[in-house]
Image (tube, rainbow, N blue to C red):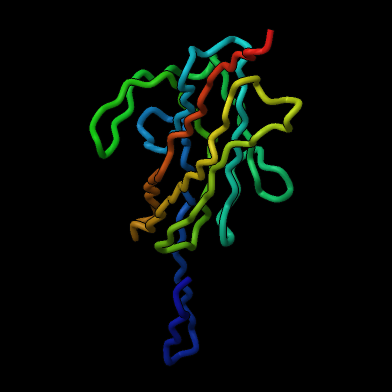
Length: 178
């Protein structure tokens, strides 16, 4: 909000400025805020299910559907969009993956320019619930969203994913005892 300006005859003019905020939908095809779950060592099975959390850091707003602590959880299955290739610093790599995102997060007015940080991690199940032969990813990804007040009543939000590929390895073991 702008400061009030007082004129000599006692009239006060109050000017105010605000935006309607902005919402980032990480599931939008135009948004680069998607993550990839990869299984190395076998194809995806219809029974495969992996859970991921996104946690807001340092007062960042929570995603829609978050719990009381601001943490959102998604499940990744064969129903998620298939990913055959990923591009990294070493070029393009063939993978056996599925893409996932966390839906929408809304940024309110009055921010000017600020970068918000979120931590994404795979939820490793209890031993009894693990897929036999599967080694779960210990990767932690970071989603940053930079929100800019454009000065004309609108805001722009730019997401950036770092370290967004989670790879689980599958291997069978054969007991040699007869």
